[in-house]
Amino acid sequence: MKILITGATGLIGSELVKLLLSKNHSVHYLTTSNAKIKEEPNHKGFYWNPQEGKIDERCIDGVDAIIHLAGANIAQRWTNKYKQEIIESRTLSSELLFNLIKKSPNQVKQIVSASGTAIYPESISQVYDETTTESEDSFLSNVVKKWEESVDTFQVLGIKVCKLRTGIVLSNKGGALPEMVKPINLGFGGAMGTGKQIQSWIHITDLVAMYYFAIEKQLEGIFNAVSPHPVSNQELTKVIAKTLKKPLWLPNIPEFVMNLILGEMSYLLFSSKNLSSIKITNSGFQFQFPKIDKAINDLYA
Image 1 (cartoon, rainbow, N blue to C red):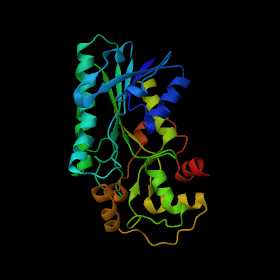
Image 2: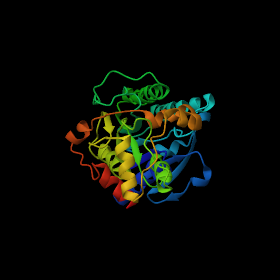
Image 3: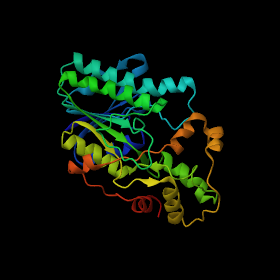
């Protein structure tokens, strides 16, 4: 197949490109940087700027499916201006792709989009799946709603829409995990708050494999991209310390301390999302790293 990827140079996108090329698929990717554009037989870059409504229309030539990963990083202090960027980087990019496909001859059959788990209510004991209609009243929940609505519009063009609501992505190359590892490595680690909050996570290898699976199986609808075994923040912290062979002697870190350091973004550390992955496993997907000890060991042992 020929697949167009947005966000291809990010943490997830770069690993996904490697996988697709190894499977002999052709990859087109969109970038806001002319310096990142290259042209190889099966790997071609195209310029776009969603804020300005600019896109190289050749990007969809011969494309069968789109994997939409573009979006401003949420792990950054949320000023009002940056909040707007978080929303617009997701919705404007979707609108630009939609308008291009609507007006141009193409063979796009499916779009698989990243999405977030923030839409689900806070919970420790209650496990939520994709049929959940309740949602949280928060900034990030609102982001997810607008994000998914912008992707759902592709259905009117007869394109299959699949959304992967992604939990905490575990990678040693970026994202949340290296930031958790740093203080533990220095001997200053501790669980966040009560440590009881549930963290629905996924190893980056499994996440990338899930995107490929969604394309291969032409999946439609919402799927939770999370491991079958979510853990408490306390357990996650202990597993990291054990893998690194470091002691945990400090008390838990109070929420107000992280709020002073990170502002509203500290919500990410104390949020509790207990999510099910049964829908994706029932579709035939198999996790390589279903349990946290195996996942952390793979990344840091």
